[in-house]
Each structure stands twice: as C-alpha cells, then as structure tokens.
Image 1: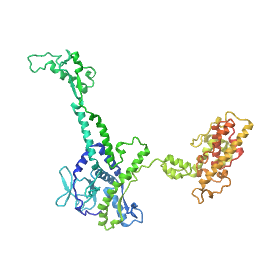
Image 2: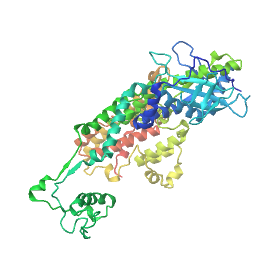
Image 3: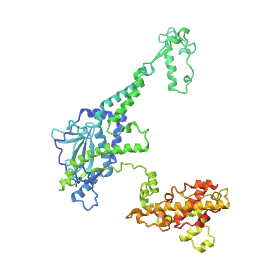
Image 4: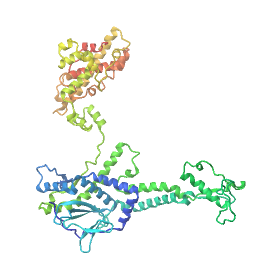
Length: 600
C-alpha cells in the first residue's frame, strides 16, 4: 500500500500563464519546434527511475540502491519497492518521463496526478498516473481539485489522489515557471510569419500567376475561337460576341493541360492573331518582390536561431551532415550531460519531495534515508573501440578479456588452452611443412608410428585458413635464381644471424609479457639467453606472435638483394620458421633452418 493523498497545498497554486497558449500553439503548428521538443522527450523516455541513498558527502552523487544489498535499511528497501511501482513499472515510467520532457520544454510546468481506482473511494493503491498541463487541472473556490476529461467537462479527483507539481523555476521570478520555448517565442513568431507568407504566395492567384496583359486588338483566327463551331445569332442578346470570348478561350487553353496532362493542349501552341506592331505588347506581369527571394534564407536563419535557443544541441535541428560518427557521438554524449540529466534532476527532485517522502512517512519510515534518482546508462552509446583495442592488444597493453569485451564478446567465448594451442599449431604446420612431423610429435598430436605410416597431416593442415600466416607457394619458397654453393652458405649464415636476432627480440618482449602483473615485472623473469626464453614459456599464451616478431625482418631485403634472391619469399620463409619455433617451444638450430629453407 502506498501513502494516501496529503492534499494540495496552497503554495502549489494552479494557474495558466498567457505565454503558455502561444507556446502550445507553436508546438502544434511549427514542425521544427515539435521535432526539437520531442527529441528531448524521447531521450527522457529512456531514462530509468531508481531508488538511491543520499550522497555521503556534499557535492557527491547519490548511490543507487541494490535491492539485494544486505546493508540496505528497511526504509531503503521499501523505497526501492515503491520506485519500482511508480507508473506501473518501467514502461509506464518511460511514458511518464516522455510527457514530462514535452511539458517542461514547452511551458516549464506539469502536474503529476496519481489516482486509485475511482470505483473504490477508500482505495489508496494508485492505478492511474497522469501528466497534465495547466489547462487540464484546476482548483475550485472550495479548494477541490478537478481535472478535465473533455472540452468542457471536468471531474473531481479521487479523495486519496496525490498531486505533484513538477516545474522549472524562473531565475528572476521564482514563483513563475520557465521553459526554453519562452525564450524563443519571438523567433517562433518570425517562423510562423514566414510560413504564412510562403503559403499565401503559393496559393495567391495574383502573387503566383501574375497578370497577362493582352492588346484589345488580339483575336483568334477563324476556326479557333469558342464560337468557331457555332454561328452567332444577332437577335440573341445572351450570345457573347466573338471578340468578348477571347479571354475565356485563353483561360480554357491554359488550364486544360493542368487538369488533363494527356490533352493535346499541353503541347500544341495557342495561335493568336494580332497586328505586327502589337506582338511585343503581350506581357506577363509578376507581382513578386525582392523580399520573396530572401524568404528561404530568412527562414533558414530563423531555424538556426531556434536551434540555438532550445535546450538541445543545435545539431539536432541543423543536422550533423558535416560531422563524422565520432562527432555525432560526442554531440549525443554532451546532450545527456548538459540537457537530459539536468531535466531528469528536476523531475526526480519533485517526485522525491512530492511522492516518495510522503509515501515513506505514511508508512512510518524515515524519508531522509532514500530518494528517487535517475539512470541514463540506456541512453549512452558506446563508441566502437575495436580497432584501438586490437592495436593495444598487439602491443601487449591490453588483456584478452578486455579485447573480447570491447569487441562485444564475453570471456566465455574465448577458446580454452587446448583449442588455442591446436589453432596455433595448425597455423604453424601450414606455413612450415618441413617442421610438421617433429612439431606434431613433440606436442603429442601424432606418434612415431603414425608418422611412419604416412599420415597426411601436412596436406590437411595446408587447407586450413588462418589470418596470421599465409603459406607460400612451393615455387616461391626458393627463389627462381639460385645462388652458387658458396653463396648459399653465405646466405644461410646471414639468415641464421637474422633468426637469432629475431628470437632475441622476441625473447625480450616475451619476458616483459610474462613479467607483466608479477612483483618486480620483467626483472622477475630469469633470462640468461633471451633467444631461448620461448623454450621455457608458452609464447602463444602470453602474447601474439606477430607482436613478438614486429620489426625483425627489416634487413632481409638487403640480404636478398646481396645474394640475388626474392626478398618477399625469403622474408616469408624466415617468419614462418621462427613462428614455428616460438609456437612449439623448440630451440633454433642451424641444420633445422637449412631444412626449412630447402626447396620443396
């Protein structure tokens, strides 16, 4: 049960201010105003009402009450239940806040009426929640409050109804309501006048069509005038003379194509017979003025002024065509902070003072322990940070769980250790087929008898696609122009040094990744030989192989040019080989590298 009505105090006088009528009239007739006001109202409908504890310190934010939190006092638990029942739940609260958004933007005041069922005069359970304008509620001389139910019909409120005034005070005259529309009434009047001028110009025959001046000597040739098909009876006084029917025929010829687009009159010219010296005397006179050419510019300027005067971001009315999606998101974020939240504070303050405190007091609770607050989390659009998250993850500055969160996944969607190792393994086997048997056997995926029987694991692995490693075609592994035997030895020695340097670089980065989050950081990881650190730690579990080897192959093009081999193929071969060592925790050996670089 909620608290019964405590009555409408005299301080909450119900009055209609003169400018309210103009404000509502403009809301009904000017689409730009209606759009801007409804934008605020629709945003307000996404705000959630919640119960909260007052701030712990001055200037702090209220603390939203978790109904399941055991530290809640009985008053706070009851407050959470009461707030959840306002307007029948979340959907009803959204519609109620939408109405508040409209009223507080147009007139700056609205009346919340919570009523029990009219069929039960003794009920104190609120079934109906209404948000009314000042024209829909009134106070009689006897002190009774009535609400309007028709054009001229009024009814008394339920005896236990609660009436709450929600309003924005005028900064100069605090007893009057204030609203953004009040400050742009002059602009709205200008827009209304310009709209009326455009409508009058478009519908006025004189302003739109002008006047066609024709010499009185103009006549239609025989056979074209209106009397061409019928003789004229000179004794019939109702018969129009041929020259008097000129204008009628001209009007008929000009209007027929407007009615029937298939008429021949739409393309066949109208022939008029006039003396030669009078041909240039036929003129069309327009009554347009220089002001007509400026009307649209003036209207655009007025709409921009309206956008600046309303309590919304100007881009809502003027558009965000010149902004990218980041800019549009920033506008929405500022709109929540600067426009939606202040309006929400006005509403929740009135609901706390006029409803929640009365309800808690009536039930014997301390009303100072709880308040009504707002939650705008449903309004906030989270920007897409996938690209930056991937970059941070590749640089070992972001955890895998955080990466999944920014991409819209949960940690439960990540592969387990076994699946991750299998995926990395298959990627390595695909790029280094010569190392496949030993890698698969060392990791327990194949036994020696299975390898001896010629299980086609390598061919199956080649068919698996991976974004990290692209297997080179057999003819690309070994350059088309082969160096001499002396050159081959020198090339192999150079590649050996490059691989060792790459493993050292990867080891240093792996050391930082392993030590991250550990006391002492990287220094806590004992590392006598960085190039062999991967044989002691699972590199794939701590970092991305691409990040570990970033910048390791910058000298390969120079080596390839020196020994006349294909630089791209050589880089791919060395990268594949080194990734295989890192993923399988195997150490680098000169002979193993030589086998990896042999032609297929």
